[in-house]
Image (cartoon, rainbow, N blue to C red):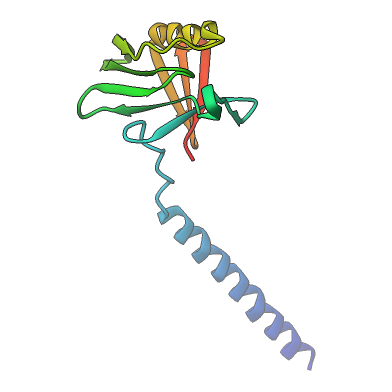
Length: 144
């Protein structure tokens, strides 16, 4: 009887080992989760993970179209458009045009657009877009 229990225990142990090995083999075959593309996403400016609101509670945001090398969005009061370039590891937003509404707190919009003009690289982490000048984080956005 003792031999049967030992044999039965050995069979159960071997089945656990075989199952765990096949599980790890299957896990290794899974493809890593793809990063969110920078292009054709609405990226919302965030502060402490809350979306920043502009005039009339409209979200401050941008959309990058890599295929057409453009960026457009809402800066808090005015809409804007610019050229988007990515050469080697350097990213830039240039040739800005904006609507010309006058709003209270225009300094916030001016600061936002000024920071965009200083961007020279970006990183995407999960669903967040981080814009940098060198190693200095300028702004964080998220896609919803």
